[in-house]
Image (cartoon, rainbow, N blue to C red):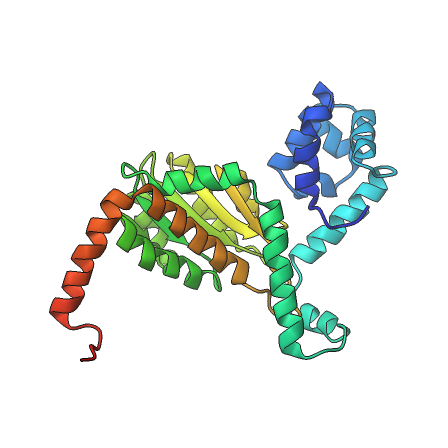
Length: 288
């Protein structure tokens, strides 16, 4: 089975065509992805409350020869999820010839096209509607690398609407922020491979406190998805030791554009007042 479609996405797409027992098993795997399916078939079936033959039938419906074939594919995807920069660079060394700029730009454009094809417009619209809702406060956070993207989102979202807060990248600042998070608030989370435990934990606690979690992640999907109301997966592969964050940035700017459109009556006034403040404080250089 090719690895172009993440295993959890395969399971979600198959849900409508499954029997009750198969759907129960698939839901268990999705709720505990990917750990649940990495053990024996007996342990998986027992944990899901179904029989081992049900597990065999499920993986065969997904196109696998049997449970061992299913597990090999899953382990390959998990390996891809957790690949380190050193491993990525070693793979890049065998990439096709051509100028690095052309190869990298080509990969980025492929990522954008693949991301557009994978995103459900209804899911995107629902996430934008949450972020635009004036009754909800917005919190944003990311990991070691994606923290910068969360910061960019907050900088511009503060212009569009009030009650937007950046969560510090210092873990000791998260408990006080979570303390103030209320039911109905929105936490926008950025988390791509190699997924960070602290980010997943914050998403879990935020959901427990009644916040709606929106996750921007990669195509393998962060474990934080288990706590998210909406998931926006992006393709991030690049001929480099590091993954590309271009699609995440495009996703942020698309969300900002959507929210701006939904809140323009308020946003226009905020922008005018902000420009007046910029003029008064002479923040920007002016040419005569």
